[in-house]
Image (cartoon, rainbow, N blue to C red; front, top):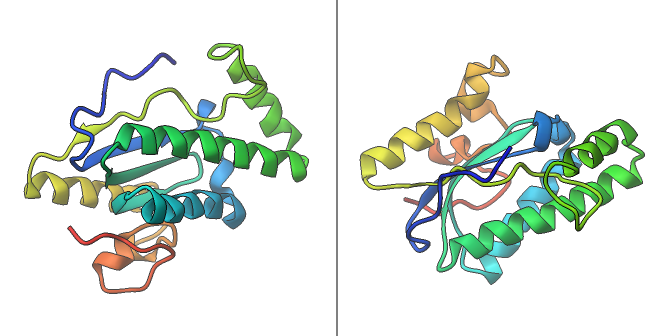
Length: 176
């Protein structure tokens, strides 16, 4: 898949983004792999000024709404760092079938590395209003419900839905 036509136009404004594992591989089925994503966001919140307004992580992709002074750099760093960490995890746990698929996917995209983890691009859409923010948060939080995994958005562990219901979560969320 080629680079996305969606770009981060005003990096200091909130954007709705999607990051997808190549071939929609189900890498985030284990808590340890999800923790790699959350740890990176925690670091970026502390060190890079990332403001995270909402997210959901499913087995093969994630959605987030975030902003930072240099959001392009934050997202690029996020994808680069997490790809390395996740590939290391898969190697350490002998996930050879997944690694074979990531190696095969790389051939279409990169010549400078052995694996391609994330699809190119992030499908970024700038949040233009309060109504659009609510719409995107509702979309993010409804994802696992639409897939039939849960009945209520706040029941999905890997989501910010609980935060908006006053429940504790796995990562701190910035209030909108």
